[in-house]
Length: 180
Ligand code: IMP
Ligand code: MG
Image 1 (cartoon, protein in one colour):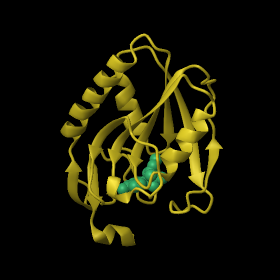
Image 2 (image 1 turned 135 degrees about the vertical axis):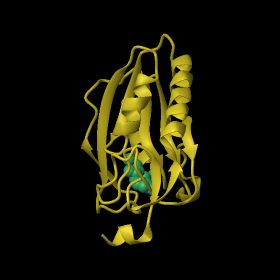
Image 3 (image 1 turned 180 degrees about the vertical axis):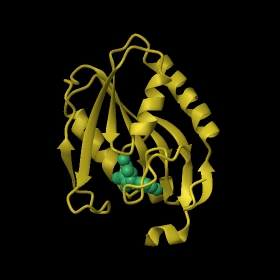
Image 4 (image 1 turned 60 degrees about the vertical axis):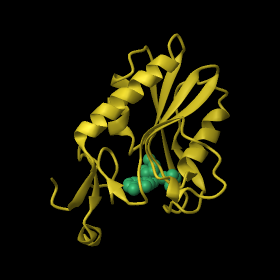
C-alpha cells in the first residue's frame, strides 16, 4: 500500500467484480443499439478502460474535458475545454464519470450532451457520494459502481493535486498527505 494511504475503502478485487457486473448490465440494456461511451476526463480514464472491456457489444469511445471557471468545484460555472468529436445525434450515449460528488460536473455534461440530440442519454458513475450533492441538481446516475460516505478518495483514476491516479484501489489519504 502507498505510504500516504490511511485505508483502502474499495479493494482491487471488489472493483473488478463490480465493474464486470456493470458491464454485463450495460451490455444487456444496449443490445442492438448504436452505443457511444463518452468519458469525462481526466479522472475517468481508468474506470473507462476497464468498463468498456466488460461490455461485450460493438461501441464507440469519445471524450470530453471540462473545468470550472475559477478552478473551484463549488461555483457550478463550468466550461468545455475539449468537446466530443463524434456526431451524437440519434445515437445511444452513456456518460462515464469517476465520481458523482456535488453533481455540478455531471449536470453540466448531461445538459451539454443532451443538446446534441442523442436518441438516449444515461449516466454511469463509478462512485457516488450522495451526501455531497448540491441542492437543485436534478440529474441522476443510471448505473453506479459504489455509493460511498462523504470522504475524499483517491486512486482508480482519482487524484489529489494530480497524484495517486494510478493506485489500483480506492483509498483515503492520511491527514499529513494533504500538507505535501
Ligand atoms: P462534482 O462535484 O460532482 O462536480 O465533481 C467534480 C469532480 O471532482 C469529479 O469528477 C472528480 O474528478 C472530482 N472529485 C470529487 N470528489 C472527489 C474525491 O473524493 N476525490 C477525487 N476527486 C474528486
Ligand atoms: Mg471527473
